[in-house]
Length: 133
Image 1 (tube, rainbow, N blue to C red):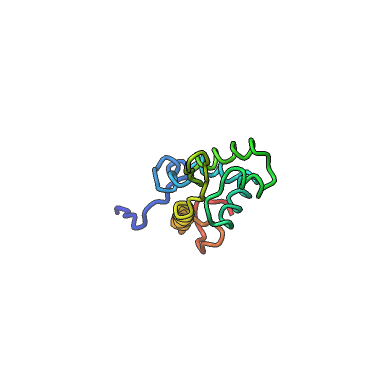
Image 2 (tube, rainbow, N blue to C red):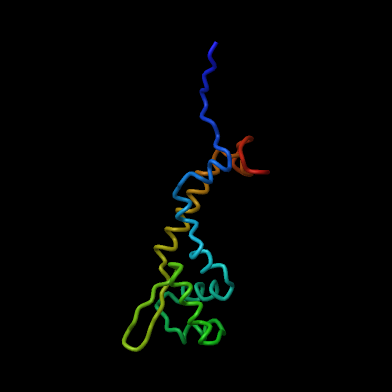
């Protein structure tokens, strides 16, 4: 008698790691590096609350950080895709890429929910899977 598998096999963690998925693109290290520093997080929060593009000196005043340090942090935030820089004459103003930031975080949350739907992660309701409880 031949056995027929009706349910697809759950991939092992190693097989899952080799498979390409949107979550790989969304978990961009430069993006999370930009947000992981407390000073940079404060700077982003300050720009979000302000609601308008701000100069480097305005951001430095808001966050109680030396001007040279602010410039370095702003460069990391820009490289990570969190801020955009606009040159206005001799001044440079920064603004939060709010739509991109919100879209990226929502897409990442959706991918995590899809990926963990049947793997047994705490809170998903499944009893089997690859994730340790």
